[in-house]
Image (cartoon, rainbow, N blue to C red; front, side, top):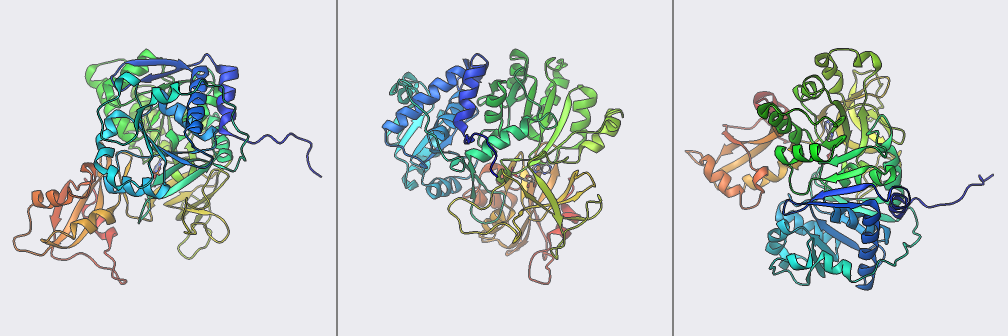
Length: 537
Ligand code: AMP
C-alpha cells in the first residue's frame, strides 16, 4: 500500500524559495574583490538568481548544460549556485588552484558552455583560452563599469547579464534525481573525476549538516564558510543556510588572518568552517596581536585533513570555542562524519578532550560506514582492527560524470581510499590513506604527478614523492631521487624543471638523493619505508 503523502521533488529551487518566503530579510554579506563589503539578503539573492536564470535561458542555455565557475566565496557565486541549478543547468565549480593543464582538462571534459570568472582569475583563463573547446561566453563577476580589459571572447560583466532579465521567471519542476552541480576531485590517481550531485542528494545533505551534532545551524546562526565554494560546495553550507535561514557571510578573496578576524567581529559570526591550515595562522594572529577572540564565535568546524592536536587544544582550551571535527570527501557531498564528545569526555580538561577530538567522529543519519580488510572481509567495529573505510548513503556518488569507471564494490559501497578503525559506536579514526597522495593546505598533491615530472629531468632516473608532516600546511611533499649524473643536479635545477608543469604549491620542499629506492616484490617503490625514514619533519 502506498502512503498518502504528496510527491514534492527535493529541488535546489525549493531551498531558495523557502529562504525567500520565510527568511527573506536575513542578510547575505560578502567581501568583494576590491575589499568593500556588499550587503544583500536571501530575498535579494532569490530575485537575482531568477534574473540570472532568465537571462541564461534567453541566451540559449538549456537543461543539463554545464556552466563553470572560477570564483571566490561571494554573493554572486551564491546566486550562480542557486540560479543555474534551479533552472535545470549544472553548476560546475572549478578549483582555480589547479595547474593550467588540469584546468583545461576539466573544462573540456565537462564541456562547459559558460565560464563565470572572478577578475583575479582572468590571467589564468587568458593563458589557456585557446585550448578550451566548449566555452561560448565568459561572464566576469563584476559590474558593467568594472569590466577589465580582457582577451577572452564573448566577455561580458555579470551585472550586464543580470540586467538582461527582469526576474519574472518561474523555476521549472525538475526530476529530483536530475544533476544539479559538478565538482571534480583530483584525490585519486589519473585524470580528475567529476562528482555529479543531484537535487535530491543536495537537499538531503543540507538536512544532514543542519543537525545539532553536525553543524547545528538555525535562523540565529551567522555562518562564515572559509572553505572555498570550489571545494565540495563549501561543504554544503550555501544550501543548508538557505534551508535554515542563517545569515551568511562570505570572505571573498580575503582568507588571511586579519581579513577573517575583521569579518568575525564585524558580522558577529557564530560558526566558521575550513581546513586546519587556515585556522593555525588565525589563532597565531590572535596571540601575537593580543586580540580578544571574537565574542560571538561559538563553533569552528574543521575538516578536509587531520587537524593537529595542538590546534584543537588551543581552540577549546585557550580560546574557549567549540571545536567540531568533520570528515568527508568530494564524493560524499562532502559530509561523512562529525565528532561530538560524550558528556563524560566534555567534562575533562581541554588537553585530554583534544585526544578524543582527533578522531573523525560518527556518521550522521544518512551515512553508513564499514571497514574492509585487504581480503575483502568486513572487519569488526572494535576500535582496533583497521581497514579501508567504505560508505553508502543518498548523498554518496555511485560513479563519476561521463566515466565508465565502476567505483562501487559489488554490494554497492563506495571505497573511500582512507584507512580507519571504527569503534562500537561507529566513531572513525583515520590512520592512513590507501593511496599516496599528499594533502597540503587543503589541496591534493598527486605524488605520482610530481614523480613522473621529476623523472623527466635529465639528471634523475628514479623518483618518489612522500608527504612530510608540516605544522602549517598539514603535509608538504619531498622528493627522494636517484641521480643520473655525478654530481647530482642541484635543488634549484630540479625545481626550475618542475615549475614548467606544476603549480608552485605542488613543488617539493626538499630533494634528497639516494643510491637506490627501496623496491617491493611487484616492482613498486616501498613508500612506507621512505615515510618511516623521512616522513617526520
Ligand atoms: P576531498 O575530496 O578533497 O575533500 O578529500 C577527501 C579526503 O580528505 C578524505 O578521503 C581524507 O583522506 C581527507 N580528509 C578529509 N577530512 C579529513 C579529516 N577530518 N581527517 C583526516 N583526513 C581527512
